[in-house]
Amino acid sequence: MTTSTRGVPRTPAVLVLEDGRTFRGRAYGAVGSTFGEAVFSTGMTGYQETLTDPSYHRQVVVMTAPHVGNTGVNDEDAESRRIWVAGYVVRDPARLPSNWRSRRSLDEELRGQGVVGISGVDTRALTRHLRERGAMRVGIFSGDRLPDDGTMLAEVRRTPEMVGADLAAEVATADPYVVQARGSDGTELPIGAARFRVAAVDLGIKGMTPCRMAERGVEVHVLPATATLDDVYAVRPDGVFFSNGPGDPATADHPVSLMRGVLERGTPLFGICFGNQILGRALGFGTFKLKYGHRGINQPVRDRVTGKVEVTAHNHGFAVDAPLDRVCDTPYGRAEVSHVCLNDDVVEGLRLLDRPAFSVQYHPEAAAGPHDAAYLFDRFVSLMEGQRA
Image (cartoon, rainbow, N blue to C red):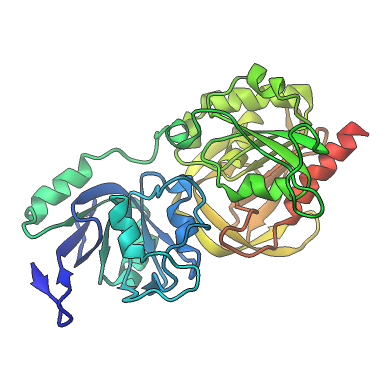
């Protein structure tokens, strides 16, 4: 083990990509080994929300911003019960966090939750490599005695790929729970006193999402990913929501079947991220894996209905394969692409024209991120108002 001039241990670490390229640095967080899919996030802030987003399950996140950890970790901003990333890669970690809400350093939080990371690597070069070659399997190894490069590479190549991964049930809640609606003064309303009730299917939901609905007077019943159609309608919902989540949407046969049951009943429906891909499949479209995905809080998306350009928060490696140039006939009426990414023309939203259902590929709860897309929760409420009327 080497030591810095400040007397702080600097355990060596190596990042090994499945194509054989390696990056050497220092251990950050827990010491050991970890494996996942290497992806990069372009957000300059919001790392705590990124780490605790269940959509990042089994992914090793490379931060493109060079300085990470400046504001430490607090007890308010986590989006779920734990850190979900498989590993974490930063260039220059903060020596000391500085924020009035900070309770501990990011390094301490990663160590406490057993998350293996690496620092001191050229994240710009790594990001450029992933942009050119695509997201791929990766391993991070740290310790005083590391295996040789060939052994580490063989271990990386033995790990499963993200294509074909069925992960939603691994991150979703095991038991239903309720997020109470809030009144105009911000206080919680008693269960049953809300203006609307939503059944939210948890495929990897972030904590801020039901809070955004609760702020609009909606009582949210969060259900496991394994919920049946009877479970959904036992809630007596005014609307049904399908959340974000990890994995390959091509494996999500149960959520697709569940969504089709909701569409057949004509209940107002809203999906985000993984939920957008589920709606795509439910309507008969295919899905495919993006070369390196969209991850960060600065992705430009055009609302094709209004022409407005939104700066949005993303985390997805798969997309819906739907035509941009026409309205399509589906088993549930006409459908069209409602939003598109301005960087690469990827489908970023769908809407049905004959039923109250729509979805977007990004994260309108904006935790962390811009608030350009907050209106989508209002749109969902309007659908429920229209259905009730």
